[in-house]
Length: 308
Image (tube, rainbow, N blue to C red; front, side, top):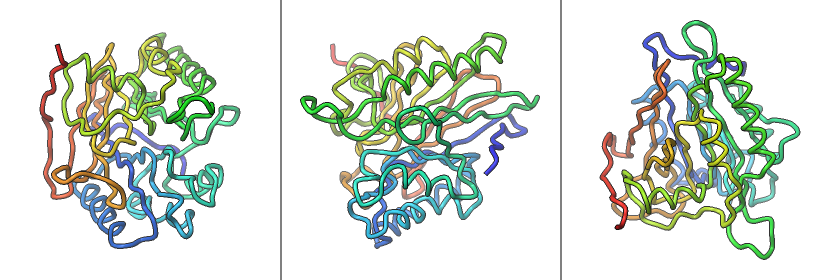
C-alpha cells in the first residue's frame, strides 16, 4: 500500500507489537494465537501493527507462504497498516527469506519495505507524518539475521555493518531535513542486542527475565550507532519468549515485546500477549504497556534492581 502513516488529530500514534507467533498450519494453537491478536486489535484499534520476527516456524509449515499469509491476516483483514521483520525461524523450511519477503510485500495493507543494496531482507524506514504535513517521527526496521555466519562462533547472527551504515545515513538525512535536529524514532528487529543483557545487570528494569538474553556473541555496534545518531528512543525485539522487560541505557529504552504465539515454548504463569507503544507528536518520549490474552492491561511492570 502507499505509505500513509500519520499522527492522529489528538497527536497520538499507537503501535501494536506482536512477536514470535510461530504460526504453523492453522491448528488449534494457531487459532488461539489468532483469537489473541483479534482481541488485542479490537481493544486497542492501533495505527500500525508490527510483527517482530518468527511469524512462522518455517520448518514445521506444510506451505510456509500460506502460513505467513495466515499469520498476518489479523491485521490485513482489518485493513490496518502493518510492517514486519524476520526472525531466525521464519525461513527454516522450504522457502527462503527472499521468497517470504515477496509474500510480505504482496499484501494490500503491508507497509513492509526492502532497501536494495543493503544485506539481508527487509531493512527499511517508515515516516510518520505530523499535523503540518512534515515528518514527525521515524520507525526503523532491521533484519537481525538468523545464525552466526562464522563457523567458530556459536549462536545467533548480528546486525551487519552495512545495515548499521544504512541506518546511520537514514538518520542523518532525516535530521538534515529537520533543521539538524534528530527526529524522534523507534527501532524494531528480532534478536536482542548484547546491551539487553547489560541493561538488566546494571540498570533499573521493569518486567520479567525468565530466560537468558539470547543475543549474538559479536557486538557489531548497532547500539553505539543509535546513541551517536541521537534519534532512537526505544528498541523493540522478541526472540526470548519469556522475557518482557525494559530498561534504559544511555538514553535508549531497550524493550522486549510479549510473546504472542501459542505454538512454541512459554511458561506457566506467563500469559501470552502483545506490547503496545504510543508516540505523541512533538515529544521525544513514548508510553508502553502490555495487553495479555485474558484482556488484562499491565501499565506498570514490576521493578528489578541491578545486583550490587
